[in-house]
Structures are given as C-alpha cells and as structure tokens.
Length: 505
Image (tube, rainbow, N blue to C red; front, top):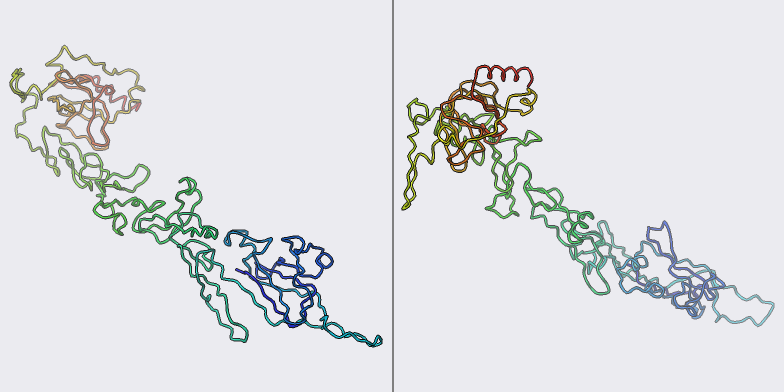
C-alpha cells in the first residue's frame, strides 16, 4: 500500500515531471500527479493551487532553492481522499506494484551571477538531475486483516547504504483469513463471502467457519446456497470424511447409520449397516441394500425379522434368498424345517372348535370360543351378503394380475381383533407366487370381515373353493379381498380357469 513520496533534490527541482504507478508489474502505467511551474502551458491541465483536486500542481516546481528542494506527494490527498482505506476506491489508488518518476524538463539555478559583459555567454543550466533522498512510504497490503508483515519466501535483504527499512510482502493474517494479502478466507471459514475490514468503522469483517460437524478440513463458498439460505450460510463442506455426506456433512452416507450413543462430531458416529445378504431387501433401483440411516434397521424380505434381517418372523420358516414362507400350521412351526409345533392330532381344525355357547355375565368380562372361532356363513348365514367376482371375459380375469390361484379346503376362521385368519388346506396349486406355494395347511388373510358376521368373500369351513388372489409382498401373506376370485370348487371351473391361465394370461 503506497501512502506518500518524498524527493529531496541536490540539483534544482525539474521544471516538469510526472509521478506514475503500475498495478500490473510495469505492463501499464497511470499518472499519480503532474508537476510543472505552468500546468496549463506544459501539460494543458489545471493547477491545483487554483482548482482544488486538479491532477497537476505548481507547488514543487520552483528552481529555488537550488539544492535541497523537496517534492512531496500524498496518495490520499484530493482528489483521491477516501474515508475507508480498504475500500475498492482506495485500493485502486494505493495498491501498486511499481512506482515511476519521469523527469521531463531541467531548469537552472536563479542564484548564478549574471555576466556583466554582453559578449560573454551565460553558463547553460545544469545538464543533470541530482537527488539526495528518494523516500517511499507505505505498508504491506493486508485488507485490514493483519497488523504486521514478514518477508516472503526467498527474500534476501539488501545490504546497502541508505536502505533503512523494507516493507515486507507477506501478511500475518487474522480474522480467519489467509493469503499473502489476507485476500481470501481460511480453508474452513467460507460460510460467508470474504470481505475486507471496514477502515471507517473498525469492523473486522471476520470470515465465518463452515458447519461441517468436524468431518471436513476445507469448505468453499457457494453463491446458490448463500441465496437459498437468505444470505445466512453459503459454506459447502469439501470431501466429507468419516462416512458422512451433505452440504454440512450432516448425515451418514448410504450404507451407514447414525450411532446415537456418540456425538455426531465423533469420527465413528456413522457405523456401517450390518444387513444380512440373504434376508435384507435391495433398493428398488439397484442391487445395493441400505439400512435406515437413523436406526440401522435393514429393510427385510417377506417373512424376515431382526434389525439385520437375519431370522424368520414368528410363524414363518425357511430363511433364504426369497425371505421366509408362512408356516402351514395352526400355531408356530420350526423356523428351519417348517414342521408344526402344535398337537400331533391330524384332525381338521374346524372340528376342534367347541360348539357355540353364549356367555352373558355383567359382573366381569368373560372369554369364550365364540369370540375367537369362526364367523362364517355356516354359523351366521343370514348376515353374509358379499358381492363376488364372476368368471366372464378372460381378459378381465387376467387383468386382475392374480399372484396365486389355488384349490383349497376351508378348515376354520378366526377373528384376531386387528385382523382375520382363515385356516385352509391347499389341495392344488394352479398358479404360485415367487415363494413357491406348497400343498398342505396354510393361512389366508381376508381383508374384509365383521365381528360375528362373515368374511367377504364368503369362506365356509368344510367346503372347497377355487381362490385367486394377491400376495402381500412385504409379509408374504396370501390376501383375500373383494378383488379376489372366490367360488366353490367344481372340476369344470378348475379346468376353465387353468385353460385361461395357460392361454390368455
């Protein structure tokens, strides 16, 4: 930062000279000030003695004194005075790479004796310029973010007479700034735009740190993020570490989850998912499996349970690539073999239901088999009126996209409070789901039922039905609802449906 210049001449001061500056290491030059005894005659410019702020002056062009005459220039004198020395206007005036003085016209000393003899020529003016002192004052340019400067790398001090002080070129930056001139923010302090300090008010205009949660070493300023935040935060963290991602490294990467036992700033706050390769479900758009980033729970295949999807749900068995299949039992089964763990009796379940007994007791709540057992049309025939699907146009049947078609015998039906369960024995499989349906005991899950009423479609224990419905892909359950095709089994109906499946579907 150039502030002022003092020239002390040994010879008479020049009759005309120009002080110039360069801000691009001498490629281009601009004038600071013109000096002449007659500004208008020499340069065609106004004199600042008569017009304040003019770029030319006659103050320092007198030949007297013949030696020791001074030329003084202050960089922030009119017309370049600035209230804030770090403003853009001040920088355009003070920031320089080179300073040049052009001595344009000599003049003689008026104190030389006058020759009384007209035939003897008067001695000419001196043919040289001589300068005692060339003093340049200034400071290192730090945008108001440093109090002192140090030598740049490779600086070698000049040991010569008359060289007393050197303005070094590397600022010792403060206010979270960096660079030789503190001209940008430090690597992790780019949350707001860099600003020079305010020389008028003294405000430091410090750089603000990015909110990277301890998972990044650098960040950069992004104008779009700044505008989107309402000019509050524009920092974007670079190269998030410790398996994090996001503008502020604020979340775990896919494949990792948040360990709530540790602060998020901890290096091991994000732990890898531990999803079982067989039991966990892949993402819809790719082969990878990711867990819940907040809990670590993995998305399981149908019939699979556990945070890591490593075992079958109760009532399911056969852990494998397609998940687990429902037990074909009235109760639970062995999760590895599917063998039922209920009574060894081979009696059909609807024969095990005790006869209906109404229990009325206002003194205390009671429970009876009628609360659990069948709510079928056999017991409440007057209440069951369901609109059933009819087998008409084969295209309509195929358009329903049934995932299973079976011949089954209804064993029993039970109201579980939150849902209904119908125990059946599958006798023939006309179409199967991805989880292969085996013949034997199985459970159907009607979606429509009324307490002590009936299921819709109607499924009467003891009768055989042809059932076409859909599988719940999440649980693997065979669903029966009003879109299902349910009709009492007849051989002709079975042959017709099988023909439609083969020919039209």
